[in-house]
Every structure is written in C-alpha cells, then in structure tokens.
Image 1: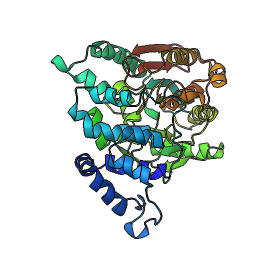
Image 2 (image 1 turned 45 degrees about the vertical axis):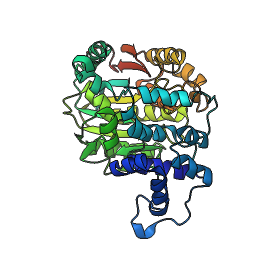
Image 3 (image 1 turned 90 degrees about the vertical axis):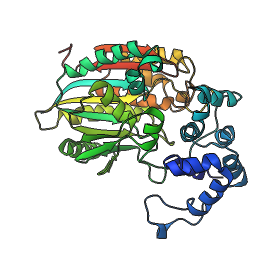
Image 4 (image 1 turned 180 degrees about the vertical axis):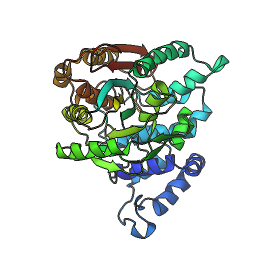
Length: 119
Length: 287
C-alpha cells in the first residue's frame, strides 16, 4: 500500500489541465496510462533517472479508477489533494457549493479518528 | 538595527478576492461587511509604514512535494512569481510577481541556522495563496519587498507546536538584530478550525466554533502558555482535519511575545471557516 503514490497521482493530475480532463472523462484509461508513464518519475530528476518500484495495489487502483473519493479518504490519501482535484473535475456539474456539500455528505459516515495520512 | 513596526496574524481565505470584487447577483451577502473589516485591518499595516515584509505561510502542495519536503524554508531570491494554475481555477486568484529582499533572507538563514533551526532555502520559489492572500488583503498595491518563510503544517510528520513558537521567537530576535535601519512588518497566516476533504467541510460556520472562540482568546491575550498547554499535534485533529494550520498562528504568537495582548483584534464568522485578524505594535499602541 502506498499513500505516497496515491498522493502523487492526485498531485500530478491536479496540476495539469489536460490530465484533469482526461481523468474526468476516462478514469480507467488515465489511471492505466499514469501508472505506466508517470508513477516512477522523480519530479526533480530527468527521465533517465526514474524510480523502479512504485505501483498501486488493487484497492488503490480501483478507488482511482472509480472516482471513489470516499474510498481514497479511507485509504489515507491526503484529503486536500483529493478535494482539490475532485472539485476541478465535478464542481462544474453542480450548483455553487453543491459538489462540496455532496462530498461532505458522502463522507458523513466517517468518525474521528480519521484514517492516518502520514506518508 | 531594524525596527519591527508591526506583527500581524491573519487567516488567509482564498475566496476573499472573488467575493470582494463580485457585483450584482454574483455578490455574496457577506461581501460588504467582509470588505469593511479587511480595509480596517489593512489600515493597521499601512499606519506602521513598513519598508519590508517577512511573510510566513505554507505551501499547499504546489512547489514543495513529498519527495523532498522541508519543515521550515526561507525564500532567498530577487523575485517570486506567485499563484498556481489550480488557484486560478478554483479561487480566481491572479498571477502575481513579488520583489524579494535577499539581504534580509540571507540574514534570517545565517542567524536561523546558527540558532539551531536547520532551515531549508529556495532560490526559485513560486509562492501560493498563503502569502498572496494577505498581500491582497493587507497591501494590495504589492509595492514592498518580501521574505517568504514557509512552514510545514500540511504533510505529516509535522514539527510540534512548540517548535513553531520557538521559530517565531527566533524570527523576531533575528529581525531585530539585523544591522539595517529598515522598518519591518512580520506577517503570518494560518487557520482556525478548518476541515478540507472531510465530512465537516463547508458547513455554515467553521467545524468547531468553540475551538475558534478559545483560539481567538489565546491569540488576542497572548496566552502562549495556555495555548501550548492544550494544543498538540494530536489535539489539532479534533477541531477539523486541516486545523494544523493553527500552528502558524502559534508561530506568530511567538513573534509577538508571551503575554503580549494584540493591539487590534477582529473576527468574522463565515461559512466554512472563521476569519480572524490580529495586529501587534511592538513599540506599544497604534502609531
């Protein structure tokens, strides 16, 4: 299990307008492409010096493929990264604040302490 | 020696610019009072007539990332570009450019390292809304050089609250020891109770109004002892999952000094989070 890699997905997609749209429209293909092409990139190094060991486990891959933000919360993905990316993808489909409140409602079964987000 | 002419602690609400500039049906009902409060707060900085601003904030996973995460970082660059694509997208914040004050940056780094803080530094730092928001509210003409100080309130493991207070005390002393005649304002922004990406987010008030009330009292009265007795890394999860940003307020209490009452205090209860504004004048009284 890699909370770090989940966060890396959310972080690198959120900062790239094209990836935000690809992930919104075709999450399964985007997750597959990202794991193959982005997961092992070290952001401060050139491509010839990538990592070799980073991969999602099945639960992580499934949560990302299904746009399952409550699942990402349970897995310990950083809530700020998840929220920011999902607002970018889905706020446009709702009334003002509607998506944010729906998001809170879908997490309303969660009680303290929340899942650990330490990486 | 440099003169610390104002110490300011504030929330940084990224929606202020959009709310304050909206017109007609788009203007939220709370905007006019919010503008009035911000403009009154702004005068507390203007009246101090600063020459340079030390700006304490926190990168929100923009430039700083988990493969190389500093706990405390000082920018040392002649310029700082500011705001990121996702802040334009979500908050409507504009791209900005700041002038840096490299000499004061170098002084803070050298003296901070010698005082036992293993400070990271950046010679090319793009700053985000934790610093641009207080410029927009407090110094919209953006005409003063800055020294950015970033803290990690975001990516655990975090430094403990005591360390934020210690750094605040050190920053105050180091700035006052700077052999320069400049008038320096030290400005820091954080949060009261706040939830982001959790079930308590975007409610009609902040997620824990009782914490907010006590936090404002700690800050306004300079009650560092009481605050440190109750606030821990664990306790900060309870008022809301993003409440560790309160440690930047604690850092600013360290700058202001133990037992030092704020000379200016204002709050504004908004949906989602409470706004809070504090100014101290180290020489006593409003200029």
